[in-house]
Image (cartoon, rainbow, N blue to C red; front, top):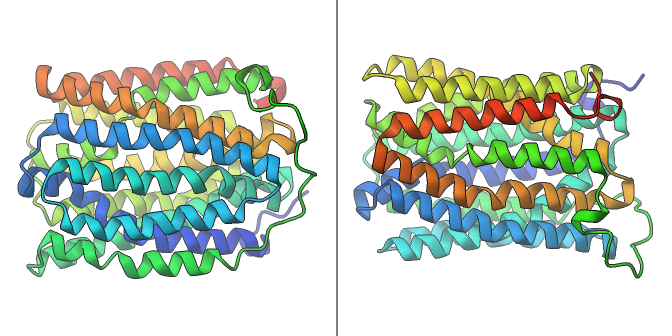
Length: 392
């Protein structure tokens, strides 16, 4: 039986986790500030927020498939990972120079292009670094370190806001951890890989994917349709009474819960199967969004929702990615993660645009209830996946 001790994981897992920690310390410093920046500095509302996040994420998602396919064909992932982190490190501090929301859209797009280039190759590196029985643990440790950065960033943002620093000035500081992440990514050593695929151009198409994996992607697509940008969650918290300084702290609580439980819950998926963790997590997500939709002006409820939302992230982030590797051959890992991230990213455009439209046209309650319904329906699809391949 494979060891479930995190410290016995290969060095590659820890280096990639440290890179994600540094990158997310910068990224999540910016993330909770964006809805505040757009609303208070650039005077943009929920529709603009939905448009920016939807276009940036969706367009960049096309690169996730491209970089994943090229990882399999060229037999190399490191260059894509380094380039992706480099683009993000440069784009974030430039947000301080933005004077209109279209420029914010451009810089968010560049940042998400970086994510598109690095995500599938990085996930393939993680999956190849460990045997099948430890994939959940490896992805759980990576997500825990990633979410640790998501704790540090918002707490730093809250402290700087409370001290009176302007949002524009805060954005400039993200350059330092961003460049540190790039430097560390350069030290990653790639594991031995199968020979790059030769000739066939059908190995990356939808028809070339295993049937159960395609059904899983359909469930991911439906869930993502209701999983609009988390910035809406933060904007909702602000409208329900949290101050500007408290909004980043709320995100820090969410990330702290995800950090604390990502490793044990993802490792649990190695023993119990991926489906139970994913179904439970998506159900928790639905409960959180229902609570946000029907909540009155009682900010104390938001902290309870934040704890549950962090638990949803911990239960699903590692298990969702480990399930991808369980359902495809070794030589298609980059391609499979490309498709997984493409579907999830592509659906963010309708998700964010529809959510923003529902909020501004019909009210916040309709938007949050819609998202909850998508999550429960997607959980039902995962429940019906072939048990012989994904476990009980």
